[in-house]
Length: 492
Image (tube, rainbow, N blue to C red):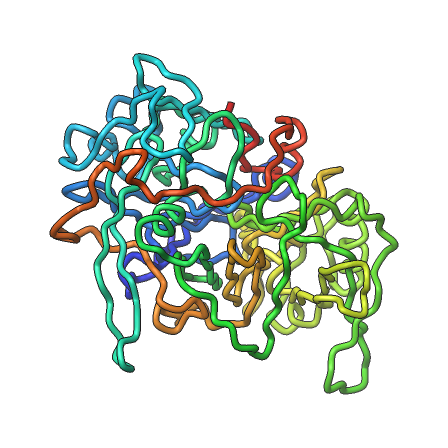
């Protein structure tokens, strides 16, 4: 895999690419199209190829580094436990798994009396607070909830001078004693969930810890490029209007927290004459059910759409591709100029009045994906691309990380909005982010805080979980449609 140099502490996201050539004849090559994030607050990699992003998170005293997938479609943060007998070989190695006895600030969480009201134990074996999570692609994780310190840096400006402070915050996370499926096979150590859950088992997110203990704003942002990116939490979204900024409200009453109301799709009108402005026309005649639900999921790499929407998008793109390969997947060898000549699309968000529509433009470099060919020599200046839009059957729309590229995407839980703002995600830093004074995960060094946070009693704690939009009555089957490849569908 390719990892970017960490120039901003651990705020940078890293990208891990599958370096082996991918055979694309046959369905199996696309059954799990790359869909994850990895360690550091820093992102690195190349989303135009198969792979996933992750960020390094430092936990404990002394701090130990874990490589976690940042996932807005999951609700729990979890790492492998030293006592795990069914965990995979991850970045941390078997000797680097989390050990409560090795951290002087770590404690197992006991039940039924839990330390914070927002924490609910699924089970209580030997009075230990247990959890389990089932993911729609078949993976299962299970273990006990623990509490320890997570280490952050905070970027700020004081009288015009940039400064960075170290902060340690007490957080709750899962210590895995069982992994199956993709969780067991992946290189990433675990997952960092930012979704919320009202199901039986519930663990407060790291963002909620910053909100409760540091009085941080309830917001976070992701900025992804092809080769790197950044993940920030607890900053204040910049309020002043900027060019190429789109603010979309959460859909009211939606089952998943980061859901938007998608009203319409449009396609670029191509013309031989030179145009100063792009023009778009209505695409399809899709019903609300065919577009709904629409979720923004950083843990999904690509775009997923219901069957009629998926077919229409591929049918629209096909005439612009010279010599497409035979098969159900739309692939071709293309030059950079041929790639840029493909049509742009717009996703129209907002209420029923399309005169106040909120358009999000999607370029060919966001919906096309580079798939290396097996034992094939390509013409100079050409690469092998496939359309990175996949069939979600009747499951609605998933806005994955590919559409979030070349933008800073700000999730504001207080305002209940998602903001898309054009940004240079290869050069962005915590000081230049549109999230002001944010927190980022710190690199693993000693002496973060002279007086680390104590294990707070239920009355003393200010920890609170992020507000959820998952219905109490939501079933496992209905949540399967929300996160088609990796998404969590229960915490039973």
